[in-house]
Image (cartoon, rainbow, N blue to C red; front, side, top):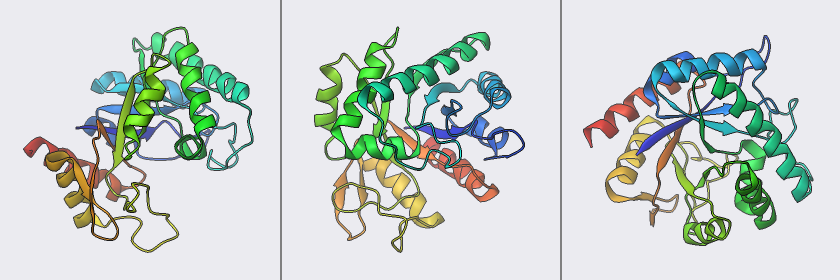
Length: 243
């Protein structure tokens, strides 16, 4: 199982994440494209960091919500979503080419990601955007019990999907992430490592009520926003290597 992390989200004098500490331990870097974070110099530096460590690069586009860090839903039409994704992905794609890299996939950020999972119209617009890009790109989205339905949606447009699970988040019985407003939504270290072990060895996880939920994931989302998060990534990397 691969590890992916959202990186390159700093903007100007505002710093987000410990990218240099995280990059050596992951397989896939989801790099912000400027709409929620990621100024041009940050993007360039993050791409160079990925190249130095042999990490695959994905575009991490968002709603045009720099003030809200892309965490607020916006009432964009399908055509506006397509245009916004083309704009962001093309910018990162061009900068990646200049760094000797190519974009391997796209993972929407924040509210756009959540809306994609909850709203079929938003999901279709995102899939259309990637299918209509000059070279179709795989879409990374959350692994859920509806994975086969999502795979069929993508196949109708000639797209490939990458399914991700979350190392440190608790799931409800329907396969959705438990709201952060609820107790236990974010696992402590021991529960996180137990969940990673179960996902990697059994292809399942234990939900908030104790049920076993089958979940086939290609990649695991990890977070390196602080030193504790970076240490957790190191432990997850070591755990997966042992399995």
